[in-house]
Length: 359
Image (tube, rainbow, N blue to C red):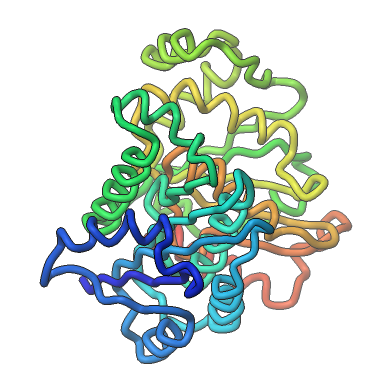
């Protein structure tokens, strides 16, 4: 597999922190290492020539005090315009974002991941190393590793690069699929699209649909780390309920998690958010790195991309699930039943079903 470093680091900062971290790590790979794509023009040429398909790519970018990276924004525009091509098919990605302030790094990381994924890129779990201006986001892990903040930054980059280079996409001939929703069975457009999808895959998979509607799920109240880990090791949670009785066992046996998400104020619903929060106990004790996340997202007006990026941040970047190529089925529909009448929706659903089963 070809390996690339896509360098979107500011030319005005030749002695940048991110370069000082990356250069010695990449030098360790020697002659079998990475080809450098410096800036958007070199990246675009490689992409248009088909060089990035099936490759491993580490994208490194820095952002200014205002959170802007003009090279990265140009890249996002280019990839989005070509998202229906195969130029990123089979590619595996890791992201390293370095900031001048303690803000904006995750924002750019999630937007890059959303765009690259829409064009066919895959992200292993926890694919983002972000370095805030103060590096305080490394404080906890630096303490665990007994190293400085800067050393923790470098080690995190090295582990990410190794993960991307060694990533193997897990496949199953008859996957176990868990779909989570908190919607009205009669009126939900997002649930209607999932039902269309499920009808196409039920003979090729084991599917389970769990509702967390109507107050069945308490949100996380923030137990101490040690208490949360203790319960998670037993597949349990202090707050019990449907999360422990039904969701945890289903998560553990699943290969694929599907979140069915109507857009609520440009966010997932409160119940879906509570589900994500309550996953923490199980995540701390169990390995999610071979599970895949998909999502059905329906917006009444706009903002499906914001919901998708929220799921990427919470489930892929935080909870360590794989983000497979084109992980979302997104639509805009308001009135009940409207989603099923969108022109071309049957083809979109069929493609989505094939991505889930074929992955």
